[in-house]
Length: 74
Image (cartoon, rainbow, N blue to C red; front, side, top):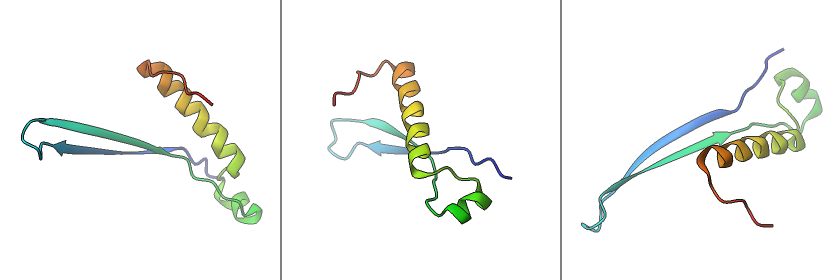
């Protein structure tokens, strides 16, 4: 059975359109796929929506700790 892992997409965006701010923005997106169809999920190995949310939260917590970002407020 496959073991789907989160995957990452990285984009580099140059923002120097106003002539004053010359900089690059790096956007890193991590995706966690899920499948709500139980029969298909047993074949694809994707997590349920709830499981995918927990995986995504764990990734977000580790990135927040790694970068020193402030804690989210509820």
